Length: 88
Image (cartoon, rainbow, N blue to C red; front, side, top):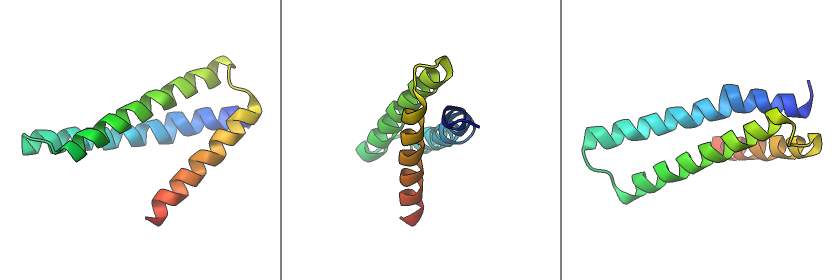
């Protein structure tokens, strides 16, 4: 599997669905509380922006606009982000 294919798989099957789950959870929290703190609203906005960025990245990978070495670098960055989040 090429780095680009690996990135497409990771974005489609892990990253974007995980972000969508967190966004859904934040929407539920906002609806349950009927009010949202600025912190929750900011987190929601940041996650929505991140989701958009990943979808653009996915589109670029799928259309061949993303080169193999770029895909490899992105995979490394994602793994660093995920391992850093697990440590917290």
